[in-house]
Length: 441
Image (cartoon, rainbow, N blue to C red; front, side, top):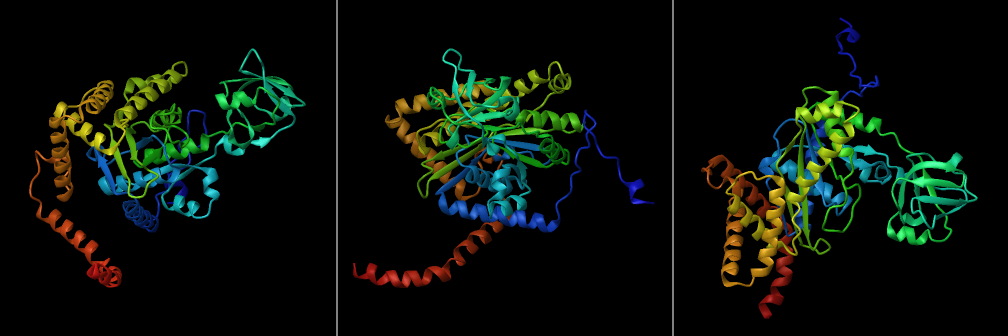
């Protein structure tokens, strides 16, 4: 039988475009992925004093999963931490969406290829200087006035217009003439101030992301995991930026293109404390997986209501992220709040809006009463309890049903013994050099 007759037909989307087939990575590439995940975990455990995963038992052990993480503080640290923790806790491999611009950086390209990352071209990375100068209309902040410009030839509807030195960009809604165009959204305040006077500008065409979506759909259809930071860019704020619609389109589109695919969305809260300092702390909290109902999928399949379906799912994802990103001034506050929340809910699954409100009230209450003797005593007990759990490798949720596992405990003993033995040869000379100083002191 010929190969052509034995092969299954290529899947196509609703527009008749062929969807790229998914190619299983070779065993060598998977081994390289596993080694890199381990190396990242070791590296970050050296930089951070503690990397604490919470709720990792909620990660689905099989099936397609989209991990959505926020706030996005650092393009590479966030991805490395999340990749390592998910691999360690659930033995799942995440393929991240990465800016195509980063693939040109030596070292990053090789790591991205090993981790099966999917490059994404972004319009803002293609901004180029254009003819003339621009300013904003004095009465309408959405109207751009050009001087010596050629908007009809150089600009594109749904393309980007931006300022030099990355001072801001926004989407073009309408091109009226060579010297006038309408924006979809206003520029940010800093850019608006610059545009009060004539200034040079840049333009970029709209990018068709169909190929990226096809790769994501195919990846999810084969039960793999995708990682994405839906805020779109890194920042140093503790609160969330508006989420991009792409994550919702990926989840709904994958289920539409491959009927029977049940995509789960796992919100991941990246909580850092003094991230600029060496030996700081990081807490990654995994929320309850978000399921997509058949009604929402039918709504997405209808062209008249597809935008509403995307908006509804995006709102659900945002609520899920807010439930796992608790705005706390320090690590100790977060630990107390998370312990109090678990005690209060007694392991029950509360509606996400209620979890968000409960987090807010617990933070406010702790900040108000944290110097009270009873609260100080409670805080000390919580930290002591957490240290005991860490010592026996036991998550909080498993305490009530925990049983003695000889094989698992033996594995932990061997692992810790190796960690103690391997550094010994390199630390011995250092100890010999330092000992005289300590002895004579």
